[in-house]
Image (cartoon, rainbow, N blue to C red; front, side, top):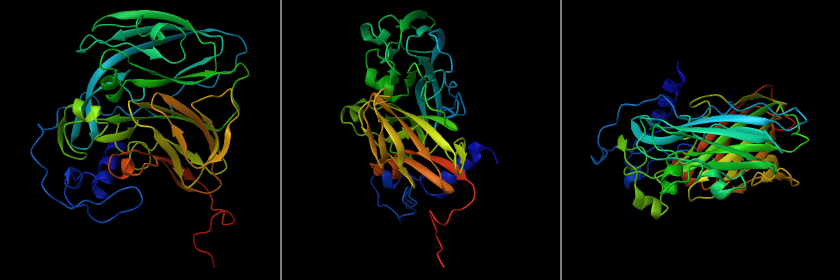
Length: 361
């Protein structure tokens, strides 16, 4: 069974594909701690039919990040980005035209070391309809480079900047209607390692959260246009991890797989544009958290929930003494059950009943 088919089956099975309750009708029975089974009712005919998709997925593969840096001297990092506007499914039957860096949400992680120079080339795909640019929070310079990188469709620009401080920093499109561009998917993360590097872990993953404001209700099948009034009111239709509803985990793209006894470092970007995330692992805690990606600071230890501001990030580590899914959520839980904000780390391995015993004798 393909990942897209299994994801569609999962969403339909838990009832999140039904739009009736989310459009204001009565909510059905509670399915589990993350989803709601809806009553079957006909959706209002307020949307045009779902559009043909340009790509099968916009959700970035959480494993697809540059390797940790082992060199001891500064270097020049060449980065190429293309801004693309693509139509894809938010969930089965629901389409939206996203704006992206390199066709993925969040945009590709850029990884550097303090003292490195980033040599950026940004291209605006000729088939796009809007001007785009990029503002790096790791860049000291006007607009974080936004002014220098503003490109119309079919154009490209080049920017060089030195990264002079460590941390995990958001980048995003920053043209007029910046909130619209970020909401539609244009944000990512640049990680600047300290000179001594980062401690070794078994796995690294990369996720990003953002809100999507549309003219339909969550789960309402059809093509959703962007809703500026809903964005001004800060009332999103969806709150998403990696751009799609429930995309990352055994229910979708099962790409965050680990074994018991292993360690994970997670890079988490919140594009926003408006909501603060209450980032929480169900079934574990963050062993260490560097709030706002401030890797030069001492981490907090054994943290249940950490706030991640819009336009900011966190770096967190985890360990896994027992098997089972570890669900990563925004603990403003209506965003999980009704708006799609969930990713899952799939932990396999032997049981350890001294730590967790679901059936004690």
